[in-house]
Length: 99
Image (cartoon, rainbow, N blue to C red):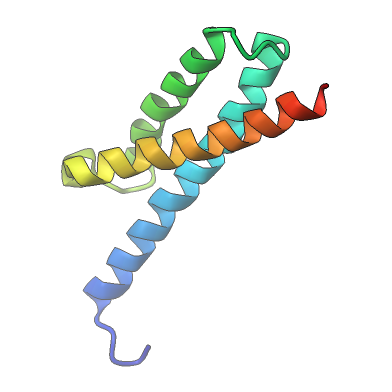
């Protein structure tokens, strides 16, 4: 840890911040999808909530000091996938528990 440079530490914090925001947004989107769709897995509103959760993250990251222009295509796909994965799992658990 003592041999890391400031740039390596800031890159690590950037990655940690992006991952945390994507995870929290995915979980929140799963809960919101369940609330909005009323527990109906065929509802298209749940996918709309996911899309909004993905798009809202980029302004939030900008406010936190991570420049949108600094995110490459790989980073944007990562954010979308992480949000989707946690949305899918959380909404799936909520739908299964309603049975």
